[in-house]
Amino acid sequence: MISNVNFLRAYSVVNRMKRSQISRQYISRAHPPSSIAAFSLNDAVGKVLNGIEERIEQREEKWEKNKEKRNTKDEGPYRNQDETVDLALNLNLDPRKPGQALRGSLALPHGSGKKVKVIAFTSSDEIADDAMKAGASIAGGLSLIESISNGDTPIDFDRALATPEIMPLLSRVARVLGPKGLMPNVKLNTIQSPENIVNAVKDQITGSEIQYRAEKNGIIHVGIGKGSFGNEKILENIKVFMNGIHDIKPESFGKGKKKSNNKNKGGASNAKYYLKAHLTATQGKSFNIDLRTLDPMSPFFMTEPS
Image (tube, rainbow, N blue to C red; front, side, top):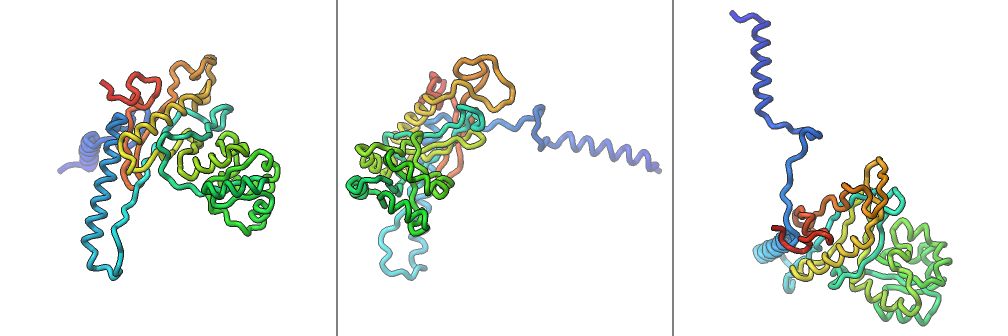
């Protein structure tokens, strides 16, 4: 007959053997997470666009399949969704540190494909009329500012443009526009001279001008185009965007607390500026991008790595 002590010892040995056969579920420095496959930029764009096409076909089939169940008489042709292609770029930045709070705007060669609702502030009635003709949803000066301040004009627009002379008056509605990220700003290229305000309105409503901002973790999210753009236009937009981001690379960067004595551009000699990048669509899954094909300084930029 086995004693209780021997039984417990045997039971403990069996449990240790079982635990050793089970893969560890925790992550630490000694047990890093499993590596995720990285796709070249060309492959990632292709996979995202293929996924969009598959979902379009599935939605059309479902629409036709359930056509008899719907009671609507004259529905017309099925209008499918044109999904947005999003690029998420994780940079080695800490926006709380001086010079690392990246924020600005870029003009994409093919635009973002997003229709933008614009409001224009100007003290000139003539320029306000021209802005309205160019496509602005609303334009005006002091009376428009007072209307927003009183709550009579709803804040349901995407971008706000202004001419320099009216900026002091906009301080009256800064508490309304500021939290929504709509306060005109030189860095965002939303303060324009009276001669350029009309062209700026046209660029904004067509989505040619996109805005970007590094989040607290150094991540920049940007809609880089639409699924209907196709492979070539998406790649050209990404190329221009990445060159623009690289041009404003801070002289020193990094999320760590340690200070480096190396003050050359790029911070510490072993610091990486690009940490991760993913490409996805509105309803699709995300694809990890091989940074060698996304870094403008890499010999494999926009190509297939060997």
